Length: 272
Length: 280
Image (cartoon, rainbow over all chains, first blue to last red; front, side):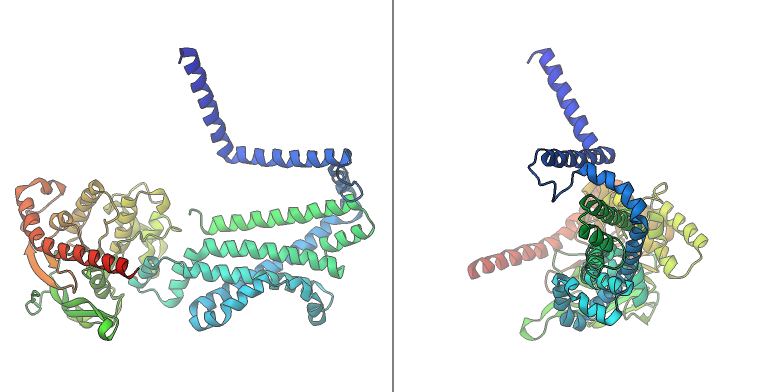
């Protein structure tokens, strides 16, 4: 290999390695993520303009973007967003309190675990949203119905992952607790729960996803509440750019809740 | 034939008497530890050495109060131990630091459980962190430390509970030989500074001779005490001692006993593999 070739080759290796390092950095990954999304949106726009996608079914992304100021001003979308967000917050709080408590109970009492674990697993796969008439009968056409359906839909993963996390605590950590004569409560608070936290948060994130899907779905179905109701109304008016614009706000809510959960997890357990 | 321990001396700190532990029942029962008796004097460093599977860790769990349902007795200064005992601090073979706590929070853990005020906890934690040579790493998490450093955190955490007896189960098993020797120095230094009574469970001959005042050799299944060897190497010691002729003699002497037991262990393991293969 000549000196020039060698220099060029080492230069390209250097560029490649710098490139892959940049890609693996947080900023690099974000830039790639945003660029990919923009590329997909541009592709959809082009396919609609070219007639490959029916413009009566899917509006152009530019139309959706232009509809956003309109739905903010005319459809009160921020208020709707806050309504849905409140429902999600309540459902999430209930999921954290009851889901973790029930998961801990199943961990603590083997008999309960044997009796109910399979049922809880089945609940995770059940289409809870189809039971909305029952919830309507119990709680009426109200926010409570929406929150309770969200809660019921997200409960199973929180219970199962809490149980999973507690059961997966390394025996040596439990032995350390025992060697320091920890009471049962201390063992739970100081050892088991912190050790199970990563799994518990996986459960909470899954629970949040299930809760959000069901909350927006029920708002849509019973035509009550926040973004789901707005999507229903806009769809019935055949305002497709507005409908898709409102869906963007659902995605935004989902991203926000995920980010908050991540923050809480990092705060409770800063380093893995 | 098992080594019979003399009756307990009144000055004894830890007395282990006629411990027998069986796993399973009837014909399936396995005797893991058989009639083991020994005692440890205050400030003494005793190692129990034996081949893998000889019941060392079972004995560790019994003395530490983590395993019950055994015959015999464990006493600390004459009072019977049932369950975990505040006078006995345990350091485990596996990585046992809490990954969600910083070094100082790990070390302060027993003080937190005891309800000590935060300022006092941090002051005591800083003392023990310095003792194991981890100053400057107080705010680090275990995942940011090497295996040897993590084990030092575990030792500091146990020392922070100020146990009368430090009970260690192969604490350096997962470390490389050089780190093991250097960590041995650190343990010796701590033991000499605090006059800490220590009982070390190990399968490492060099480690046992380097650190101990006395080495107890165990037989392979069932685990019995075969021999007690007093290590008359001068104090204070460090890892330099391993290059001395006297050290080599002690190692050779204990190896004579251990070799027979280790061979039995290897033969047993091979025969179990053969039986398993024949069944398949």
